[in-house]
Image 1 (cartoon, helix red, strand yellow):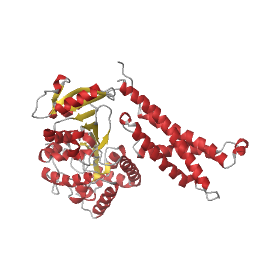
Image 2: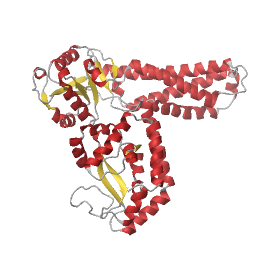
Image 3: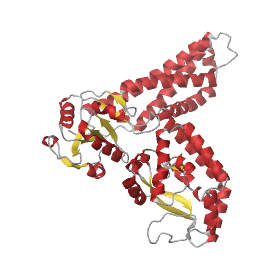
Image 4: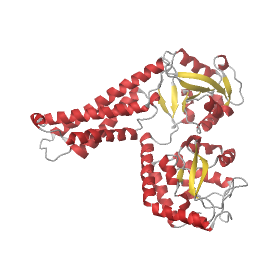
Length: 471
């Protein structure tokens, strides 16, 4: 069977833009009719207010939908959940538009407000859901007919895994699952499921298999007695950008960490590795963009001054870039003003200390006031980092930390940050043991992550900077 190209999320955006444009256009005309201005519409020149609304209002709707997390995971959407989300987002958007634009004290009959609000909501919800439904129906057909397949890996090899495989393959609605093979838990052999699928190795091969087979989805189907394998799987998957599903009989192990989603054929549980709700993640990202862009513009004279001082303080480049590990194990280059002598690590990676002779005199001043970190606003603007999050480390040190504290991998569930709870409470680490100790604070942070906590950490960080307690 020939495969079809996947529908790009951009079409969802276009559909929402068109829906909002049509809704506002019809609303404008029908509102004028309700106000008794139908005849004047034919005698007046084109109203620029309508044009501004058609351009501006759809942009506001797209922003609201984005904050609700609408424009991601198009092929994982549930039509029922999408209907509910569309309904409530349209209610919220209608209220915002009403109080921002439509509320007019000159209208004496206040029952008119109810009529126009219901009219706007009905038009917006109707057009939005109509276009979304058409796209979701097409996606559903692609999955059911196997024209779009999702590369899926099973972790498990015995009864649960076999039952899961047979349930999905025996269902008429497998929703595009394309099983590339399975991994067996450490300490077991590739028996049972090996009759149906190709064994691809054990859990230690997970990262390699996901990369080589281009896995998009992992289903954990280990036995109850293999709980340690499940915990190991989840730890390893925290570094991978894949969706994770579990069998229902494992929900007690992850109480409070999962949300259920009914899948026709086999009942599975979606494990959401995101630590914040969709809208909080998007608001957090919006704050990152605004603050980093504002900081780069406002602090430009300071950045220029620091760059000049770095250039004349010692030989070498102004900026120093180093590879770090970010969200879900993705590598990126962090940027700093160079505070050390060139070839500071010619003998290999080495952590700095207060008495480190590699640090230049101007470098010590920069570190005291954390001026060397300012270029990281560019990393934040690019989306590689956030204002608040665990400090990013090099793979060289992560491997050493994980040997002593396997839970460290869970810190990769969130974006690394310019500052962190660990930096505020513990400060800089000079040894791997101190990095392990600091990571405990960051682990507490991601378990309690919220916008309010981010603001508190930023306030404490600013206080420490003004006290000159960096190094």
